[in-house]
Picture 1 (cartoon, rainbow, N blue to C red):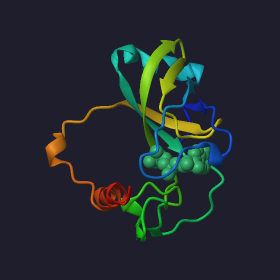
Picture 2: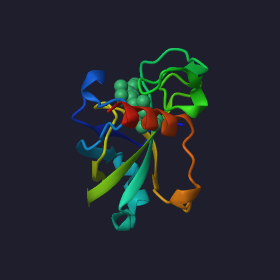
Picture 3: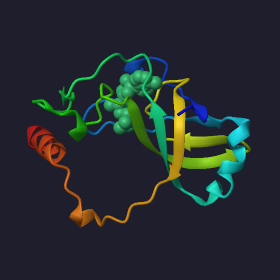
Length: 148
Ligand SMILES: C[S@@+](CC[C@H](N)C(=O)[O-])C[C@H]1O[C@@H](n2cnc3c(N)ncnc32)[C@H](O)[C@@H]1O
């Protein structure tokens, strides 16, 4: 695999990215696609939201158990969004605001500036909300709700 582009984000340091339960990702920025792949963006303007598949950089190793800031205990890495995973691949849903040639203006970034983008796909979900179960995240949110 090789990157198809990169992210231009206002997040420069890890501490710039909102974290924890209820964190809102509203940062606006750009997905800059390499000109050689621009044709692959044909008709993307009609999509309101996109999956951005990207690479965590500068990470060494992984841990099969992760302790998210939102939880009071550890969970299997595949039940979390921890960056420290066997294949350091990130997935973020962004809102597409506009397209200018090979540049997508988007909202909802949680990646650092300069992050390599591996792929872009339209956000499609056919799972009815009432069938969605979110396991420990629902429990953590319920705990937070009862504490506040
Ligand atoms: C918990 S991860 C979740 C990322 C993505 N939404 C996902 O589910 O795969 C988000 C964190 O990744 C870190 N991060 C963002 N861009 C990164 C990059 N290029 N390399 C390493 N870590 C990064 C930031 O500290 C951010 O708080």
